[in-house]
Length: 220
Figure (cartoon, one colour):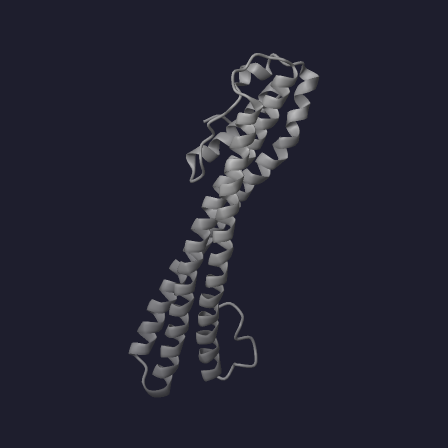
């Protein structure tokens, strides 16, 4: 794998961004049908190539955004494992308890299960969010390709694809990104309901142990 951070120079900078954009094709997003061969950019005056670098920050932000979503998902999965361990510990404690104490631990288990169910829904939501992030990265790559083809055409360098082809590619991917964004928003609303179920179970437990007025909403 190329080290995309170690490529110096104007041409290498273009290649580095192209590599970042190409990563999207390996994810859940669409691949690009229209791209500009890098050798065409090498035929441009060096000063003119700077105009395409405005698209660089968009690609980099999209790439970083995709990674951030994955890190959040990994954190959530670790939290699910941690809660599973807490549930097992609570079950062992309940097996040795009786009466009110057993009932109290039962509410604790109910609360932990509710949180685990909620976090499983969080992971499902993050999966959709990761797909959206991949599509956004591909969109950024398509916009970068559009900037390149406009520059190539401006300098009358022979290239069979038209600017209109690249513009249509951007618009098609943008429409899919917008549709998926609406899906993410809808899932977020459903996720809020699951969070409320967990918080209700959490409040029942802290009310039972006499701490309903001091910090039941904190991490558990």
